[in-house]
Image 1 (cartoon, rainbow, N blue to C red):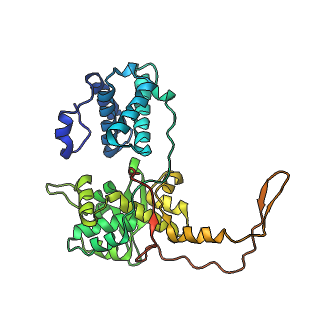
Image 2 (cartoon, rainbow, N blue to C red; image 1 turned 30 degrees about the vertical axis):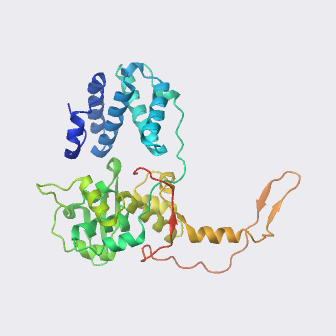
Image 3 (cartoon, rainbow, N blue to C red; image 1 turned 120 degrees about the horizontal axis):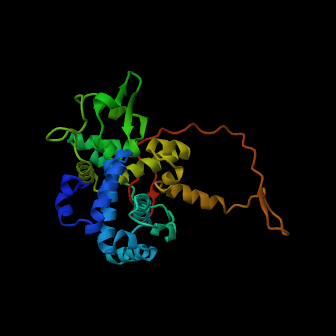
Amino acid sequence: MQTWTNRKHIRRIDHALPRWDWQDPIDEWMRWQLAVGRSKETLRTRWYQLERFSRITDKPIHDVTADDVIGYFILAEERESGTSLSTKRGVRTSLNAFYKWCIKRGIAERNPIDDVPVIPLGVPAGLICPEHAIDEAIKSEDDMTVDMVMLGAWMGLRRIEIASIDLAQDIEDNPDEMRLRVHGKGRKERVLPVPGELARRLRRRPVGYLFPGRFGGRVSVDFVGDRIKAATGWPSHSLRRRFATVAYYRSGCNILLVSQMLGHSSVGTTMHYIGLNAVEMRQTVESVTRTDPLIHVSPASTSKWYEPPVITAAAPPPQPLLPSAPPQYRIGGGGTAA
C-alpha cells in the first residue's frame, strides 16, 4: 500500500493504517488526486485526515452519516483541548472531496458532508514571529539557516517553497534586479523580486538546489521547518504571517498585492494572515471620539450616509516594504498553514 508521507513518519504509518475496508479506496483516490496535479504535501495531509477519521469513526464508507462527522469533531475537541476551525474545515473539505469520488465510483451512495454545516472561517488565527527573533536568527553564522529565515520573513515563502528552490531554474538575475520563480500550492507559480541583501547572498551560492539533501535532491519540508524553529523559536509559518502583516501595512493596505505575493487564490485567505497593528488601532479609536459633522442620521428611517471631505493634501509616498522594525502586531491563537 502506498503511504503518502515522508521518511520521518513511516514508522507511525506502519501501525496507524486506515480502517481495513477504507485502505484500498483511500489509496486509489490518492493516486487519482496525484494524477490531477495535487501536491504531495496536500496528499500527505489528506491521507492523515482520512486515515484518522476512518479509524475513529470505525464504520464502512457507505454507512458514515453526518452525525458521525459531527461526533468526530466533538471527540477531537475533547481529546485535543480544542481543535481550530481551520483544522475542521480541512477535514470537512477532504471528506467532501473523497465522498464525491466514492459516489462516482459506486463505493458510496450519498455524501454525509451534504448535511454537515459549513464551518466558518472565524477570526484571524495564527502566530506572527516577532522582529527580535528574526533579527537574532539572521545573525547566525550558519548560511543555510539565515537564507531560510530571510526567505520566510522577507518574501513570505512556505516551507515547501523554500525547500524547492533551484538556483539553476528559478532565478532570473540582471544588474538591476533578481527575481525568484516560486513553485506554490497546486502547482501554481509566481515570480517575486528578491530583496537586495538576500540577492547578494544567493549570487554566492553554487548552481543547483539552494538547500541540497545529504544524499542528492533537496532537503525535506520538515528539515526547513526544524531549522527555522531552532533559529527563531517560532513555527516557520509565523514568518510567512509576519511578511503578510508587514507588507500589508507598508504597501498602504494593498490587500490584492499582498495576496498575489503570497500566492493565495482568494484575498479572503490573505485577510486571515494579517495581524492587527496596535498603533493604528489606538489612532482609530481616538479619531472616532471626535464629532464628525459630515455624518447625518435621519430620525425617520435611521438610514445613514456619509459625505467624504475633500482631501487636498498630497498623499505621502509609500514606505519601503521591509524596513528594520515594524510596529507591534496582535493576532489570535494558533492556526494552520495556507
